[in-house]
Image 1 (cartoon, helix red, strand yellow):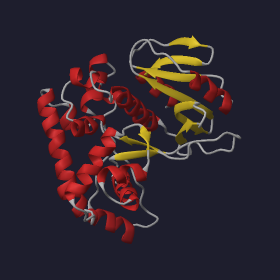
Image 2 (tube, one colour):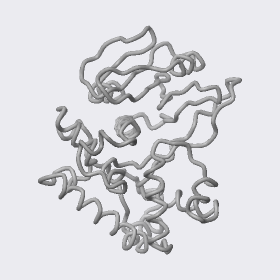
Image 3 (cartoon, one colour):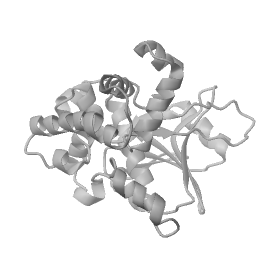
Image 4 (cartoon, one colour):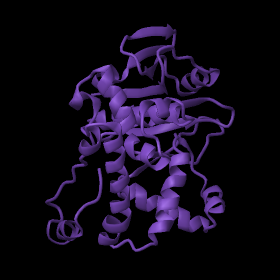
Length: 281
């Protein structure tokens, strides 16, 4: 995750056509750092960039992430040929941090920042193309339901999300309104990163009536439904059960921050992050 050398990108485009493949290098995941509760909490707070995750303390980790965002905006983007005012893209990025896990509305963001909606869409494309943001697309099959058509936006690294929001410690995070959406984003990134089926199509499901799933993945082996819930005693809204019924899925997974796996309802299996990664892999 991050930017690529402009010279390398030009070489791949001009001289290696048909002979080049692309590998997305992601930050640390739970299965790479050790599947312990401590490491999971550290990933949730600090994100997966090595210098941030391995920093000697939370203050040093936050300082590195704040420096990273500044360098990315002021140096990396111009080197990629993206010449927009640094202050504009920083304000936009911070706005996305406050909208983490919410539906994208270009007009709403434009109104808040005093810019035009097409400019906001361009900025979103820039941060998506440089692997900073994920615009998770909605499920779009014709089910005879009124489906939400806007994507949901997530900052792809939790550590950068928290740096932009000024969150330094786990205590700060657990007292912040973003904590549930932060766990949701962490789960989504881990699960999409676990998919080795290149035909898989990750998306979310939401209807106007309120049926909703955080992540739906269609693979060659079938359709998988997942809901992220922070805490050790997850609860489900009726929208979860309605969504499964809409999609014809008998059993969905509720990915929580514990480790024990158990059936909480006829159509809901509670499971830890490490175990569901192995299941999808």
